[in-house]
Amino acid sequence: MITKKVQMIPGNPKNRNPYYVGKFLRIFIFVFLVQLNYDSFSQVKFEREYKIGENEVPDKALNFINESEVNSQINWFREESEDGISIEAKFKNNGKLYSVEFSESGEIQDIEIIARKKEIPKEVWEILDENLTTEFDKYGIMKIQTQFTGESAGLLKLLKEGAEDHGCILKYEIIIKSVVEKEWSKYEILADDEGNILQVKKLIVRNTDNLEY
Image (cartoon, rainbow, N blue to C red; front, side, top):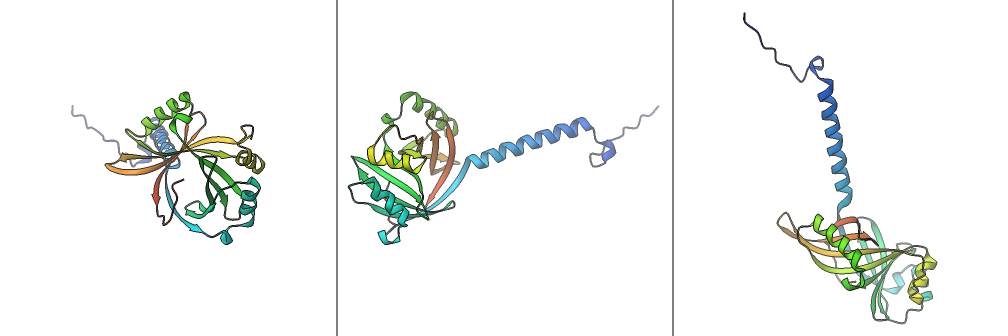
């Protein structure tokens, strides 16, 4: 007796096995979510920064800096990126380099202070280094900043008094360089106060007269 072999045709709905169809959909959804998560985690940051005059600075930003009673020369910058436009005041205060960022209308956004690796608690750095090594095989640190966000009053207290009870949220912003796909690139890393990476952005900077802080 001759047995005829019948081939199942995937394109025919009658021949589809529900188990394999369901399995395929689960795999597809999983891959889609992983890719979506990766895209939101690793982004590209286009940035252009240039110096502006005090007359181009919003009144709210000027008032905040004046209230802080910073006794040093203030350099004002306008930053344009994919996130929009911001205004930055950069200066040296009590031996530290500060960058205070405002929205285009002058609302305070954050305060960043240049820091050294040794200023980060050892246990936090160990976690951060492990996370960076997982994300990048090898990397070199170019800049470390402590970043503070919160209410305007708390940020003003931090800037004016250097107080520790300011109630602001501490994060770390780190600029690194690393080889990815055989190409050296700069990356901006944002991590929380425990060393967990919150965001990774590849930097593409188009600046004319930027100060490196």
